[in-house]
Structures are given as structure tokens and as C-alpha cells.
Amino acid sequence: MKSPSSDQALFSNQLKEFGQIVRELVAQSSQSPLLILRILRELEALHQEIRSQTFEKILPDTRHSLYPLLKDIQENGGWPYIERMKLRTILQFLNLENDLKEQESMSFTVNPIKFGTDGWRGVIAADFTFERVALLSPIAAKVLEQEYGANGSRRIIVGYDRRFLAQEFAQCAAESIAAVGYEVWLSDSFAPTPAFSWAAKADYALGAIVLTASHNPAKYLGLKVKGAFGGSVGPEVTEKIEKMLSGPAIELKDGGSIKKFDPWESYTQQLRTKVNLGAIQNAVNTGQLKIFSNPMYGSASGGLERILQVPITEIHGQADPLFGGGSPEPLPRYLADFLELIKFDSSSEKLKVGLVFDGDADRIAAVDGSGNFLSSQNLIPILIEHLAFRRGLSGEVVKTVSGSDLFVRLAQIFNLPLSETAIGYKYIADRMLTQHVLIGGEESGGIGYGTHIPERDALLSALYVLESVVESGQDLSVLYQQLQAKTGFFSEYDRIDLPLGSMEVRDKLIQNLSENPPKTIAGQNVIDCNTTDGYKFRLADKRWLLIRFSGTEPVLRLYCEAANKSQVQETLEWSRNWANSITQ
Image 1 (cartoon, rainbow, N blue to C red):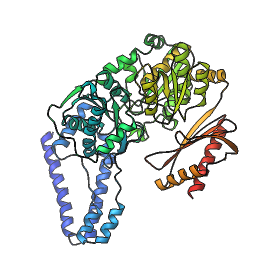
Image 2: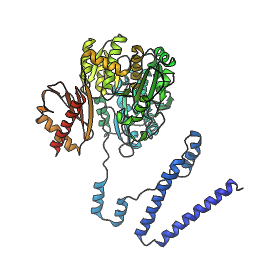
Image 3: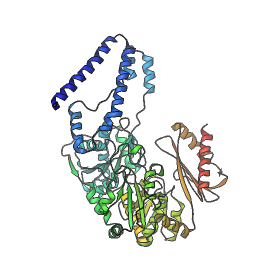
Image 4: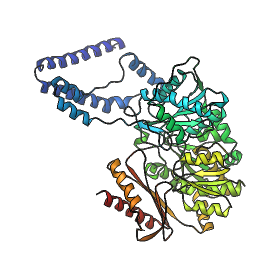
């Protein structure tokens, strides 16, 4: 029998022979760039074939077996990679100035650091780089100190989600913040963004820096800035950060430090105090309720079981930086397997609830016992009734302009004040800081509560949803239908996003809406236009259409609520045709 060492020696000799054959072929072709190019292409094709058909299939799937591989990569030259020569390099040899200029025009443009409705996001390795995070993070810390440093704190919370390299970017942010003299509490694991917002308030920090791109596709990463009060900072704060980016760097200071902390412990303890935990646990333990969870490979993974300490049927709880090939956004098109799992579940529980969380667990959707999807347009009415009627709580209902009219009807029934804001949870949070708010929510799944911090929190929303089902003894869809009957308001809702050719096309549509707004839409007269955020047209038959634009990319967003699905689709199709007619 051969020894392992003799096998290794044979393999090494064969590998050397292979390399020598390639070198000899290169030497024979050394005067022909085309032949050398063919050799390089063949090697690249061979590299890709081995990687995809063999190497990736046998990668270790446990931490123990993965360690030797990672150790070898670290010690012997990194991940196997074939770099393609840049066209610019070839052109430099030729010194063709005009061709170089043409190549410059072909290069992608790195987008400036610009904060949107909740943080800055960018494509990893293009917009979102370690250099930019190291530049931005200490500036954000400095602005947080300027805004919230009256109590003398120098503490900054740094956290992250489960995206590709998020932990490494968090380490980079922590080190750059500590280097300018701040006391950094760096998370020892991934956690929901609301957990870091809670930590900022509960641990008396200046604020939190969270490395996450929330529900965006896998190629993105982002950075959110949270204030000492436990929520997203306003645009006046992010504008200060953006302005300081073009100024002098923050001076290095001694006295900075980095301490690891567990973001889950205090956060889950806080959430347990918000609901009748015993009632939910008893319903599960006695076979009355079955809970399904889909964290979409994100930060809510294991969260419900941590809080409730009862069995949860969870799928997609493992880490996957590609998010199963989709986006970690709680929308039906990404949830087919989850909907089917619940629809065809044959267990005997009377009540079944599915809960879906986005990538950083600040947005939620749900699934009823029959496998039907419920967005926050359905959940917020259920939660308004539960909090006001069963829990006896009071306060303002805050909705965005894209929220359902059913919110308004229920606020009237329960004698609750109501206010409407632009889209973006930071506007709801601003209201929560100055008013007594019961609930504030947006159609994209972000819901927050006056009983907690001014932050959308999907795990807390999940607990309230479960509590409402347990205390009512009703399926989620039954609860929603009862509210429709109670108010006499029946509606359907949908939204579509249309990519536009450029920001210039976007500007042309905005100009048309401003100068020549439609008087009829889908055959219905326009009776009102609300311009709080975009253009919300109220039509004669009570349906509404909201047309608004992304502030950072050429995307047209169309929202509609109407009496039935047919009217919704008719209205959205009209708006699609309208946009095409303007831009052609």
C-alpha cells in the first residue's frame, strides 16, 4: 500500500510535468500573440471548468473541515483566480492615445457616497469598498458626536448583517472609528438592524453604524447610521456627513478602543416584555399553533426561536451571500417554496402562521394558514385593531402616502388620530420622536411602535402578529376580512417598479407631471393630487395611483389601490403606457 507521502510526491511530479508542458508550448509560440492568447483562453476555460464542475461541488460544508482549506489559502497565495488583462494595459504598449480615451469612456462610473431613504448602499468592490468605509465611518461617528454628544459619551455601536464581507467591513469601520478616539462596541455576530438601534439607546451610545444593504440584491452592501435615540438619523444629519466627506480627514486620536459585545441578549429580553409570551408559548406547546419562519438567509435567522424558546419551522436560515439567487425582500416572487410549504403542510394545528423577514430584519410580511401572502398593507390593519382593541393602547397612527385607505377607516373607528408622511421610515420615526404614536408603518413592510424605539422592527411585528392570532383564535386572512367587513372598505393593492433608460428620462417624466398632470386616468376623472412624495392621484371611483421616482437611480415606482384586482391592473397598465408615451 502506498503511503500518503508517496501519493503527495507523485501528485507534485505530475503537476510539475503539466506545468512544463504548458511552458514548452508557450516557448514554441513566443513570437505569436494570437497563439499565446489561445493558450491563455484554454487555461481560463480549464480553470472555470475545474472550479464549477469539481472544486465548488466538493467544498467543505462544516467549520471543522473548512479550516484546513482556509488556512492553506491564507498561507499559500489566496483564492485561485485568473485575472484578465485590461485593454488599457495593451493599449499602453501601443501608445494609442485616442484608443486610451475611448477605453476611459467604456469604464464604469463609481457613484458618489449618497444617502437614500435609510443609509448609503453601493455595489461591492465598485462603489462599496474598504477605503470608502474607512473614510466614511469616522466622519459619521464625528457627526453623531456633534448631534448627540451632550451626555459626554464616546461610544459607537458597530454591527452587521449576513451579506458577503459584511463582518469584514464592520471590522474596518470599527478600526477606523477607534483610530480617531472613540469607544467602539463591535458586534460579535450578525444581528437584526433593530438590535443595533436598540443597543444605541439602551447602552447610551452616540449612535450605531450598521453594515447592511437590507433587502437589496446580493451584489450590494450598505451602511446605515442610527442615532442615540434608537432610530435612523434624519436627512439633515446625513447631509452633514456627505458634506464632510470632501473636507479634511478626521484627526487620529489616542484613547480609542474596540470591545466585542452580544447584540442579541438585551434586544431579545426587551422584545419579550412587549407581548404575552406565555400565551404564544402555550399555543405552540399544546398543538394549537404552528409557526413557520423564513429569514431569507438574513439576520432574523434563529431570532423567533431565541425569543419564544419554542420549536419554529424555519427555512432559509443558513448563510447564503447569494440569497438563493433572489433578493432578501419579502415579496411573493421570492417566496414560492415557503408559500407551498405552508399550503401543503398536513400537521394538525388549528392555527398556522408564516413570517417572512428581509435581509436585516426590519421589514416583514406574513403567510396565512392556507399559504396566502399578506403584505404590510394587510398586516397593519390587523395590528391597529389588535393594539387598540385587544391591548387597549392608544396613540397616533402614522402612514405614508402609499399606505392603504383601510388604515384611515380603522383609525376613525377606534378614534385614533392619524397623520401621513412621505415614504421612508425616517419620516415616521421623526413623528414618533415628537408625538404619542401607537403604530407607524409603510407598504414595503417596515412597521414600528410607540411601545418600543422609533425604528421599524420585524421581529417585534412578528410577535404582535402571533399574539393577535392567539388571542383572537382566528387565521390571519380571516382577521383581515373581518376588518374589511367592519369598515365596509374592500380593496386590492399592487405596486410595480419600472427601470428607466437614464436619469434624463426620469427628469422628463417629472417635468411632464409638473407642467401637464393628467386630468383622467384609466377612464376616471382625477379629483385630487397629493404631492407630498411624488404624485398621488385620487380618482372619481375612489381608487388612487401614486407615481414617484427613486432619488438615486432611474426607476419609476407605481402604486395603486382600487376596489378589485382588475381595476388595479388597469390603472397600473395605464401608468406604464403613459410613461412610455412621454419617453418615446
